[in-house]
Length: 242
Length: 240
Image (cartoon, rainbow over all chains, first blue to last red):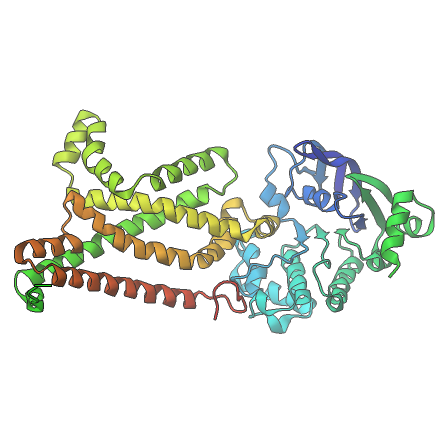
């Protein structure tokens, strides 16, 4: 489904991604972890073309992300993305947030978009908040709306860029629960996160990144049970301590 | 001070008519210039934030040129110099056939000058929103133009209502510069009344009051708009 071949990216002289290759199969859940500054957020933003890259090739469902003739907007409309800071549109209501791209990109009727939005809000447990504005919701609620907004486009895959990092601890689980449900429903997911509990529960594979390189790319069992490289061990011991 | 106060002069003919006519010219020049400034300023301000070197370069040149030349100089340049720089026929047309030449020139000059200032505010409003919102819009499949239309602009215009209000007020006050090329607006009429009657204090007090009236109306109007478009739950955008 998602294929990355030898991706390298530089900011000026500084190399942020170094020869990264991996793939995410249909229905697979891949967790990407690593210390901050390791390039994991940059990597996931390359997948839907929000960050350009200088070398290598990424294809999603056979379409080349960096290709000159690729209609990036059309490709992005098929890939859902959830951000660390939610990024709901503050000036429109929750339900309108979920309807916007359905109306403007997919050309659905208002009625159809509304029904779909309400169904998804119900799914993330927020149907009663539909007419509020984003700033009137808690962080966890906003992130669940953001997930619903992405799902409204009927995406073929979902990208999560540290979806729980900006949340208060007591709100992390309500977001993770929605993500676990999604994973169990067979959604193809690429998730940048430090939530190792989530990785243990639903990840098929775990990727560990450091200094712009993919250092480990293995199954969940291998990652948590067998001996890994020194850096991955240090990283894991640091975040699993508490 | 040996001054013969006579407030009655303001209500005698033809001076009352002069003031009214001047006031209407002030309003006409300012509103027409504001429409031009707001439209062009928005386009230029947006162009300064797009992902295109040419558009950004041209917009930057525009802003730096128009905001760095004194308004008075610009007024003279448009009125006296600009027609001479045109090809002969076009220059003659501007000098002879341009309808309401003083008014038109004043509107164009004031509009283009204020546009450069509006552009900077629009740019600041868009840049205040940050990359995250832009990315979120792009990620759900909106085109870059749709991201501006549905995500960035609705929020940035709300953010810049206070500075835009100042700019809207300034355009009424700056419209007095148009008297230098012969637009008989409020200040020009006040001067004329002084020359005819030697009642300068009364004339300029009237002009002052007229400016205060119009700017107060503008302030009220903008406050009304600000309240109308307030985003529920957002404190940072000027909510009370």
